[in-house]
Image (cartoon, rainbow, N blue to C red; front, side):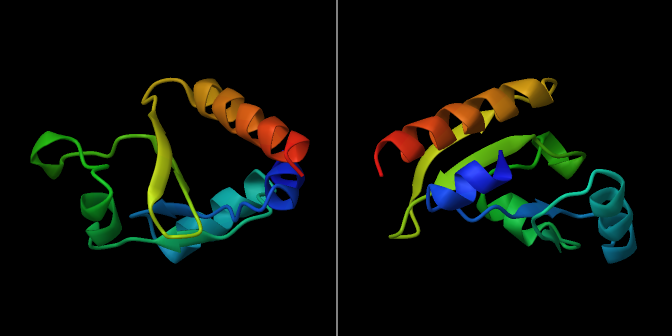
Amino acid sequence: MHEDLRLGGAQVVGVSPQSAASHRAFATRYQLPFPLLVDQNKRVARAYDALLPFGIGLRRVTYLINQQQIIAEGLEANLNVGEHLDWLQAFAKKAKLSE
């Protein structure tokens, strides 16, 4: 799916507060073809409204940010990773059809 997203003009980046070592292990384990960025101070999480109340955890949010750097669409599905994958797959398919 990553290749379809890339061909559709998307750049995929993961962001979380875990350490760089944790990111490397996760990326290796799941063979991720995109970078994972460390948000140690949760600045990005705050800016994108991904913090749970009182900052005790994070929402699982996926955003599509357009060429003007504006959030075009977003999905929050905290307990269902598959929902994010389905949503991105629909975007990739739509992007591929509009080429």
